Image 1 (cartoon, rainbow, N blue to C red):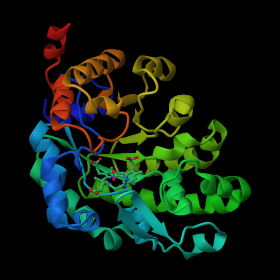
Image 2 (tube, rainbow, N blue to C red; image 1 turned 180 degrees about the vertical axis):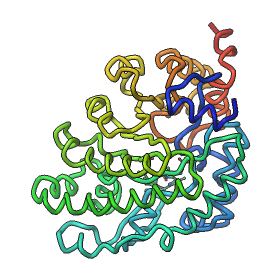
Image 3 (cartoon, rainbow, N blue to C red; image 1 turned 90 degrees about the horizontal axis):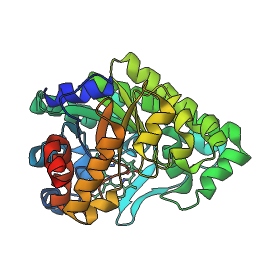
Image 4 (cartoon, rainbow, N blue to C red; image 1 turned 135 degrees about the horizontal axis):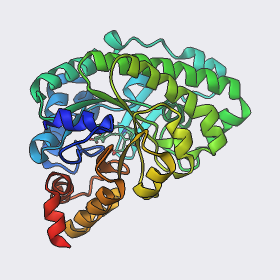
Length: 346
Ligand code: CP3
């Protein structure tokens, strides 16, 4: 099978010759060739210059032979286009003028994928040509709840008190913000499919910080809106939530083809709870890839065994960490490419 066939078959829960593999944040600072590009340009220039975005998107595919290539960009591109002032600092993204009131929500500009994010669409169509059949092309967007978290907090957060203040004190305004973000993300994701993405992943990383009740009210309906739009555009959808063990069945109600799960749950337990109607992606702890090649092989083998061969995409439970030695990423990818190597280790 080609990488494209293998990846799309796994999304559809059809048989595969072997489990497909890729890694969230597979293009990033752990790679010397990425750091070499970043020495010349800042992160935002990298995201908005198709020549450079194509180059770094392809780096992990060429080095490791992953079965999928995720377009190099960031979930905050959409909110920047809507008028948020986003700066990427050493400590992560910073947003000026956080969104905390109904007036702030009204200030957000309507978003048009072609005129506001043409650079991403151009990167995708060029990647699709460069990749041919060897790897599936993945487009992505943020989940509305996660984007709302950055807009209200003004950056990363530990307790998400600003976000939760909005959800619990002013639910109507929260819903207005989330609906605005969902419409923008749905249009953005569908335009990525038209530009050549084989599949779309929704990164709703921080939705796992909510109670199950709040997830059902504030995250699920907006994920569903994006899933429906992308599926109508003809591509499968992966939904990722970090810390999803307590909301797995709710997450499945998003209608996603594949649920991307973190390492706090065993994949066999996830499978038992969900049945065979949905694919699973994951779920090795990214910290293990900062340790030894042997530990990586064991963790990948355990994930492959727990998931079984049908409807599984081998991945991490969150993004590759900057401290990761590239040899550990190679060992991880090889675990899917040559499962016989694992069997020999006993
Ligand atoms: O997966 C990929 O390889 C595609 C690229 C990608 C990036 N960000 C590149 C990036 C994707 C899919 C994202 C999604 C994203 N961005 C998420 C959701 C997934 C997750 O990791 O939780 C979130 C929450 C963001 C917001 C964001 N952007 C943060 C928190 C940071 C700082 C953290 C860090 O690693 O520095 C960024 C910056 C960012 N986005 C970098 C990369 C490679 C590092 C920028 C650099 O080169 O200095």
